[in-house]
Image 1 (cartoon, rainbow, N blue to C red):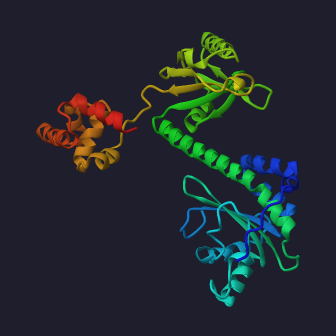
Image 2 (cartoon, rainbow, N blue to C red; image 1 turned 135 degrees about the horizontal axis):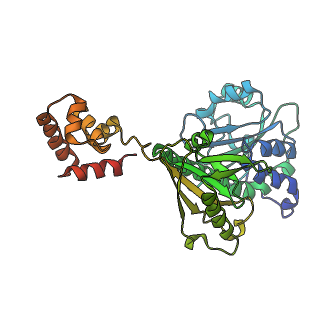
Image 3 (spheres, helix red, strand yellow; image 1 turned 180 degrees about the vertical axis):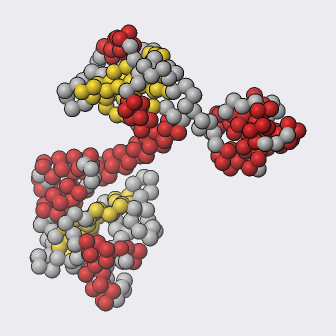
Length: 381
């Protein structure tokens, strides 16, 4: 195998600023990477460019993006993915397919011909970048047979981009991690029937969860009105409630420290006569340069008294290995039902529920009914 071609000193001049803007900007697009891969393919005068994000040894890629490729080509490649001979490249080094794969020793000529047909060309440049968390980012640029071979210029241009590709992959990994973590926390909040509303410094709604959307749609103590800026403004409760919320927002400027500003707690009366809404407005502790304008300023957490149903019998049964009858009793107690009323609801005698309760105590490790209720409500949403 020939020695690796070294990038010359002028390689950085091969990187147009527009290409770098597209690289980093595309990470925030609805379909990340696609816009960049199109621009990258044009930059190298290739038929198309591909990004594969995968865990080594996986049977299918975790993510595959090849803008502009024939869908049949992409589908055909899936059958070759686990046998792809162009993997395990020296980390961070742009490699030419013909230098890496030897048809005499690596694969039969028939297989290679089928593989190259599947990837859409016989000229491939590639680089593998390995993340600390274990996944690989495989970038590939492919030319079909109607175009000339890649030369030193295209290879140097690809190599010059590698440091930026590495940074972009790290940023994308971080964005994906943050999105996953937000999904977990949001799911937990939704399960606890907590409505969440995030406001900017003008009191305009930035984000809501599903529970908040339901409350706002009812227009019963909480509502939204057009602010003329593409975002609705939140309206809460009485005039005094609104004044208190607006006053809190006015304190959250670039000179304030959200960490030391206490949350605002409100009881919102509802015109329908339903029980009051409980609202906690917590200042968002974002960086100082984002404390103003359309940046997040307040997170409102809204609960409806009586809306919480408590843990389900199925969840209790699975967590503590209870019998169905024991789980039904435990769920009733967790929801505030007395032992006697639970017996009546379940259609069993008082002695039977006492026997179930003793068994529940033994399996959960508690000794009193109050401890059991606390345990169930603390461990389960």
